[in-house]
Length: 81
Image (cartoon, rainbow, N blue to C red; front, side, top):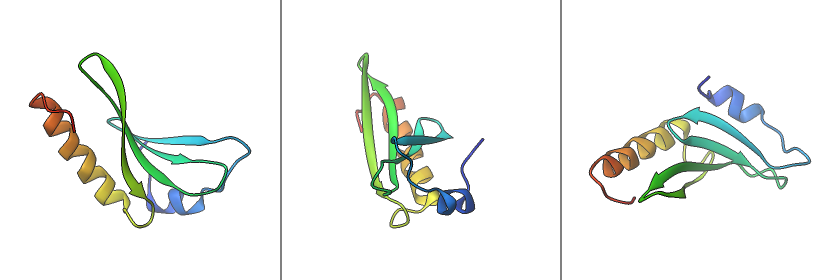
């Protein structure tokens, strides 16, 4: 189920870091400190990699999704974002 701004705003830090997935490798990482960080997991050249897009709300849900799509376009061309 894709994330919504309402759901993201309601997230509180837990005793363990948590990941909330949006799809296409994009997820919101919430460490115990409570910050909300956009990340994208992907594979390139047979290796798992992690791309960071910034902190919510500085980087909105819409911006994070656009950056995910830009990264996916680069990966489709064989370029490591």
